[in-house]
Image (cartoon, rainbow, N blue to C red; front, top):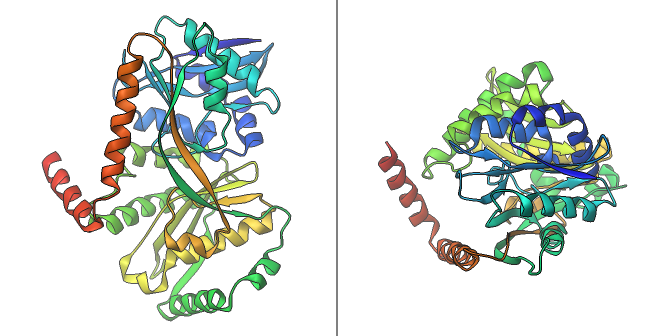
Length: 374
């Protein structure tokens, strides 16, 4: 078994098929190469370097740690598409996670630029990877694992369940509300929700970008769709198979007025982002799209629907449990470790303070910062 440090994206492109097999087996949609590599090409920071580790047993790829260095020479490693998506971590063949962690740790510890930190951002709280990397690190002293923050991600477990029975188990209030939303949509001439066909994805994703920005402009702007992420989204129909990229839309007056993007792999369906025309807000089109996406997941026999980080009330219409997401940093011992741990503590304090700023003040601050960037 061998680990290989990869800094050339062409090498990763050649490993896509085996990489995706691992992501699908792990049920990690955001770990698909068709999501991560477009992010790298379009949305990674200027000057960033790939530091991805591939682990092989003979010719078989058994593990991928898709890491990169945002600042050259900074030696602070993140996973590709961190910040744009969650649950991004190494993927490995089932039962061989410790072997992959051992190889990953050796490659990183023996490289000419040993990392000062490996950031796990928004991984499930029960993910074994931060502790596996810590325990596998060679040498006499193990790295520290410092937590930055945690947040909830609502989930709906649908494995082996029937949609008709699930609907029947919901409250009459839920069922009446969904019927009311559909009537309102009919009244304004709306059509959908519709699962977009592959040939129409480019148009639907372009509409999504416009709708998302329009929806957030009055709130100080979106932090989710940078120009780079917009370019990434444009690539997705070419890099993700239709079974992995699911875009639900509502149409009215010959145009798309709402769109929701979901990714799927290995039985997990993850809701990423959406947007809608405020003129149709009374129909609550995002809720209609997500409700149809949930029905579709039942029909396909998926395992769970992940509604993403944040416990917003609308997610509770479907979620029956929640997964705690963890932001943690593995910090090897050595020069700079104390300073690195101080940086993590400072980030934790900034997050603590930001969470206590009223929403209205956050919106005003966003507007001021956006004016300053012009």
